[in-house]
Length: 186
Image: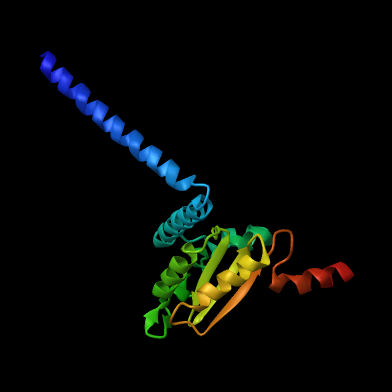
């Protein structure tokens, strides 16, 4: 009886030991003073890409009756593939278009993969692919990050152009600036 309990204890200690070794190695990897920041950003981007992909795979739609009642700032944040169209065409149709020889969903995955390789977080950036056009919306911390992200996305094969509505925090998106300025004049 005692031999069996000693074996269980030893197995428990070895499992705990392996867990703490893994935890320590992971923390050392992510908290490294030289490369830790880049690794944390890449880990965060990869995790966010996986979460967004799972959300899109669930194919959840928001009924148009509910969308109509939402304030405009919230409507703008709803990704297009979650919007329900009143027409017979299903929402998220952009993901079924062909981009060159590849479906847009494949190009979208390639764009997200390219974004996950950047050294800064891109989880605030929404990406849509419609036919051969990649549309970027969201905000990043500095102009250099915006330029680097745009350049990285341009390297993905199968796209004709990139439309960027990226902006800095506390500044309007490029497609909103004119309307905000016009409304402040009146």
